[in-house]
Image (cartoon, rainbow, N blue to C red; front, side, top):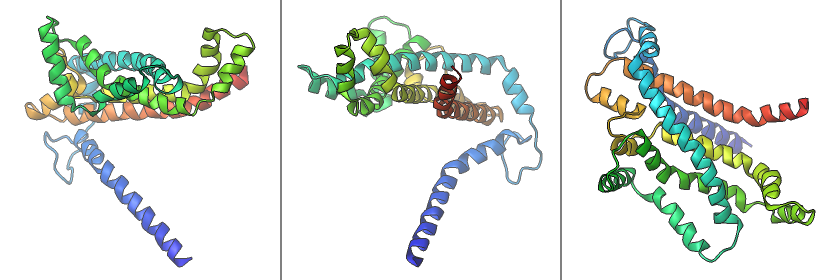
Length: 266
């Protein structure tokens, strides 16, 4: 019993230590965002929320956030659709080139993003496409869509094919079976894939660096400001981005309960 208690205490201490190690940089960034001084020093002598006001009023920050949001939303929607149908081909149906498809669809995940971004930039230039935020969408999709496909495929592997067969035996068409049986059962994984896609696109730096051209996303802007022209506006925007990401994750976690509550009210 004593050994069990000691083991639990040790595991708890280890878990707390890991969490503290992971979140300590975020605490430092938060202190930097509320420090009145230009550069962070401990202890913080003067606190101020001025930089949050400037961040919310800045037209430059608004434009960059809007560009990042456009890219992330488009990538999320397309990845969910591509991932859904790709997962059905990956895990649900047997067809001639299925094994080859399973290997090829996962290859972009293992490429270094810098190499992938450079390769896409060279390809865009070779076909005469001027890099903008739209080409960044394509670049993100090349890397993120396979991840979304894999996430949904994990759920599709445990899918009971007898449910679809029963629906067809009762006269349901392929479209009705897909809408009423397949999609609802795979919806939790589709939402998870969409959440991953949004966060991966929102915070992606290597692919955006090579493929946005004259446009700029939030990670690019933060990097540029860290290299030259640093101000507390950088950690402030970073903290606001973290808060937005946390709210998105919280909403995704609460989404199933919200849907259940809405169904009960009906």
